[in-house]
Image (cartoon, rainbow, N blue to C red; front, side):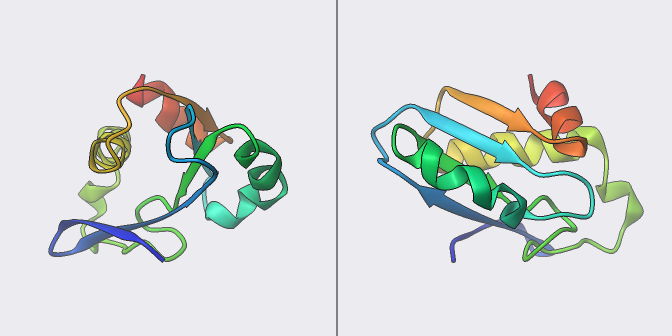
Amino acid sequence: MPDLRLADDLSLHYEEWGDAEAPAVLLLHGFTSDLRSWAPVVEPLADEYRVVAMDLRGHGISSAPEDPAAYTMEAYAGDVHALLDALEIPLCAVVGSSFGGMIALQFA
């Protein structure tokens, strides 16, 4: 189970499927959910794409900073940017469900 450490109090959990050389798709889950919410679509997408799903900060296996100020749209979008940089994904489709869609818009 891979994790990306961004700070002493912040580690982001993510998972990947498919061919690392294929076009990438990043999946962002909704509020109070985690990357498992994408289970029904991962395998079909992985047939043609590099699929990446992450647990947003404060969700799933990712850490949850204690400071409420750590939970801004800018912070979440920064996490997306950091993950894509770490995985060397310069361009991808971003799919967000509900709260994940708001983060996708902020990231864009």
